[in-house]
Length: 414
Image 1 (spheres, one colour):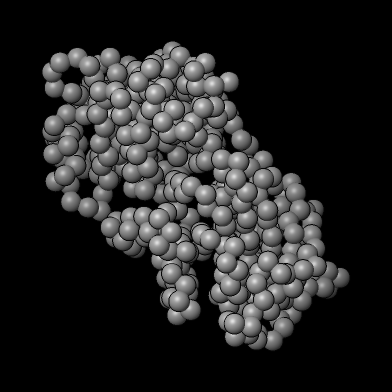
Image 2 (cartoon, helix red, strand yellow):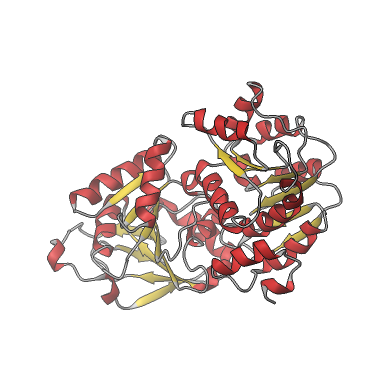
């Protein structure tokens, strides 16, 4: 199927073609006709499946007629999203797909002065893309009214729950019309999220794409057993390989992210960290520099990285193994997109093996283990124990490139 086969109006279709897209992704193919028909939608899809275009395109089309009418614009659609970065990226999608329509949008989020955002709202917008905190703040000030809202979209609902925003979401729901079209997207559907969906949606159509365990199939995964003390040295060793053009490194803590960046900078490896303690401007600059290849390494915590969409990201490294197996899939899913190859490498220290077993059960496949590196742990399966080898760091010019590592083995799931 091509986009021309979907009931999309010419101005939006032209913009899609200029972006270089010809065929819709599975979620776009299924969701766009449902939404254009005015139905509520429950979408189970993670970042990287094309879900933003799946709701942006029909929202633009549904509001185009309203936007063409004379008079002051009122907010016809609200997209509620958990992070600033994701809000900005959704705004970029509306700008791209809607450039030949008369639909106006703006993005609001906290951490910056509200003046520019308030001015945009007062000039009139059709689509508002917002994070919960700033939206509630401006509503309390009487700057934003949602009384004319026709379409409500809740994006990344499971991350809303993780970040403690569900109470805010429920308050916002009391301020919008009951007669509306509602869209609900979540990568996972735990009980709390399913209950929230039931309170928002009316007789929804359900679209499920890319089950969480299947996205790993196109990504080259490998595992390095290493002590906690040697993780940074191993990271620097791997970065000797020039084939690693860009890499997103995941760490469990904010402090850990900053510590990694300091170590990399000492080795003249251009890097930056993004996490909740960084200012909005610092986070946006780091992300922009990374996308433009001015930075080679971006170190991130899971919450800060949620929603980040980076084209042609070649590598992901799990500096820390996540304690939630689905998080592993979300992390490595940042690479290997749009038909491109991707590489995901994970460092596993002694106390992370339980997390690793949970991941293997989820993805239902084996992960290749790289033994040949300068900082290995010896593992004896009969003893089920680890013992450190001496931590010897070779000089940078003598370290072998990661591409030369040999004799991989497989770690098998139970």
